[in-house]
Length: 328
Image (cartoon, rainbow, N blue to C red; front, side, top):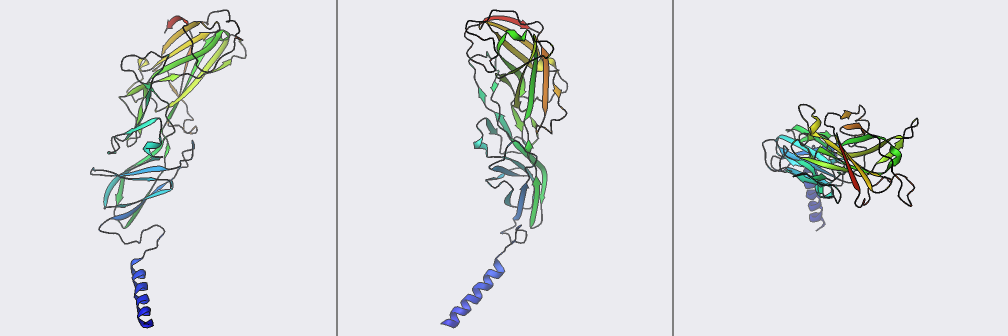
């Protein structure tokens, strides 16, 4: 009996020895059928906006067909078992369902995979025909590999996601700044999504962003002159052959300190965007700024009763102000 047990253990150890595979990179492991072990490494050092708690890695067959997708909380690598051939790879932070401001569409194809901002409504902004108001997106980092060859028993590649959002800062010079109580505005013609496989903003679909939080500064040498500033993160401007002023319109509504007079301005700014040289240092795909100035000082008005005449940085219910329209 002991001899039988001993022989059983001997043969069992032989089976383990010849069939087991313990390799850190899986490169020496035997594969079932003709599939090869593939590891996609992911390096997040270029994405400094937040630490991902998970990621999505998608591998698309070069010849077409459904991608293989790994959703994982392990953000350093993802493993696949693939047939030999050419592939395309996408990686981005989190999973598609974890974003509350983005909708992922066309994800069955490398060419059409895209993230699109959700849309919202507004109590105060009057939309034009077919105009959509975009929701400011959450941080999205992505990288792609247009061609990856799987041939040997083990292959690996490294992708380095980076932030794909752009940053637009708006600066408005305001003469008569002391008469301003609150401000709100909008910026039209912004791309509403990002093509992950092409690494660029969507061209044909555009949204408007509402600018509802502003900061005010007063000129050190002239207390009647000030600047309003606001910013929005988005997917940037659609690529065009040339900058056209009409592509983007900036609207600003100023509520004066009498709490009833509203002055409206509109600027065409499609040719006024300036690119910041330090975009990459700021961690943005593109960082832009646009500067405009009100053509006339805000009129003198009597502060409303109980008002200190101070500036309110956020939009509140303005009631039914008296409009004064001024367009450029």
